[in-house]
Length: 135
Image (cartoon, rainbow, N blue to C red):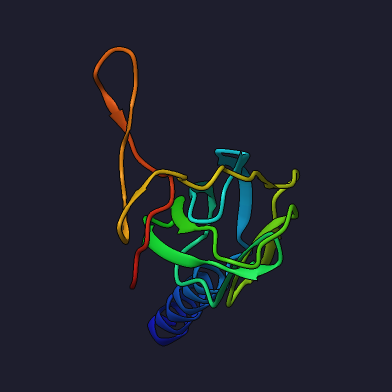
């Protein structure tokens, strides 16, 4: 009788571990909902651990950080307005809304080969909005 109880307990623990390992991911929200290429997007949901694919606007995105309930990713070049999705061993989750790609103006002031800041009326300076990052 003790053997049967031990076997049953091990079997239940095994199947519970399998269910956790292969749990279906969900996306409850993402912010911001629009931005330019290079925008950092925070995706909130459940079971987001160990994604095998992250897609924003149909283009593979770079994962920057992941807690399992909050995944931070970057919108990559080539993206056009479209959905947000995450694939894990448990399946694929799709956001309920689209991420809208916006365009930003290119900096126009140059000094030689360098971009120059735009000086505003309050003596602060502004630079272009594009940032280069590598993983």
